[in-house]
Image 1 (cartoon, rainbow, N blue to C red):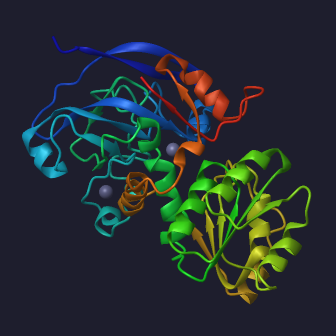
Image 2: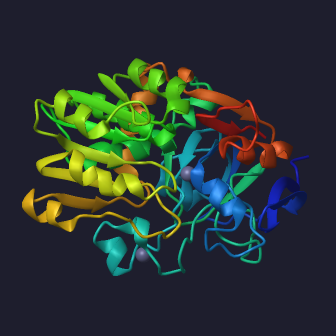
Image 3: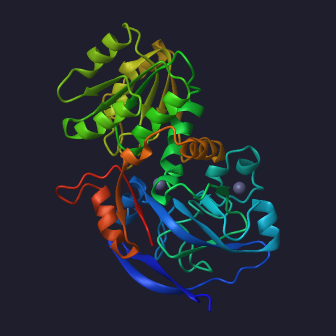
Amino acid sequence: MPPRTSRAIVQTAPRHLELRELPLPDIDDDSGLLRIEACGICGSDAEQYAGVLPVRLPVVPGHEPLGIVERVGDRAAKRWRVEVGDRVAVEAPIPCGRCPACRSGRYQVCRARGFLFGHGYVPLAHSPGLWGGYADYMYLDPCSIVHRVRKDIPAALAVMFNPLGAGFRWAVEIPRTGPGDTVLVLGPGQRGLASVIAARAAGADTIIVTGLSRDAPKLALAREFGADHVIDIEAEDARTRVRELTGGRGADVVVEVTANAPEPVAEALHYAATGGRIVLAGVKGLKAVPEFVSDLVVMKELAILGAFAVTSRGYESAIRLIESGRVPLERMHTHDFRLEDAELAIRTLAGEVPGETSVHSCLRP
Ligand SMILES: [Zn+2]
Ligand SMILES: [Zn+2]
């Protein structure tokens, strides 16, 4: 007898999660059902948990799902080029495919079905409810976007398609990083490390990563993944170090992926070379940036580029890299959590659990 219900974590209020049994959806010709193998956890999960993101509750969180196609409609199978038993990575956005944003290729900012319409964000009240990856099973909408991933890769590594996809989009695609470029990554979290891996894969010349003193293990990991230099901004004068390391020119590409603190955005203007590209991808809780000297943007002709989420090209690059086995990604994976420990998982990632440092972690139902 196939199961009729799925365990799922439901967020009912800020900082409140509960484990429930939810009915499995009916699958028609255009939809599918995913059996979750792993769901990645990132900084925005912690913001969602804290109630900072504008997400309607109650909701099943989890926007980085990886799993096995359990059921799939005939038309959906053709459209997604998958069959039952295939492993797929699922993108968070569920775009309409028809609005001006979708038609111009910016489907990640599609608002046709509301802001943040995607896996992990659609509320329980919106049928069939099982929209998030913090569950045994997840509904695949006709407009969900899936990518096949080889099944012999350990799930904890395969689920890194999400942070690595961000690295490819934010550190390579958006700033058009290529051979000869000096790339400076601000922040050595999972996105920062993914940016190092992606910039290295794209043939960047010199890669530099900044962090705080307490980030020493993550900075060491950055070196393992191909960073040439790391800077502890509490122990060294970062502006001077960047100048020294770039022969006085500054960095061609600066990728800002620190969490919450707005100050690195202002610093990025000082680190960038004339004509440099600065990618802003770390969110700051809508705080203003103090000491932002706009004259530097003018005088150095800097390009400041916003990066919101990841798109299919970044995910495809990430999946190819994961499947290549060329990078010791397991060095970045620090924690597996059971579904019922979702709260602990989020608090660990947010640094609220003494003695635990999380780089990449996931839920394994
Ligand atoms: Zn995420
Ligand atoms: Zn759209």
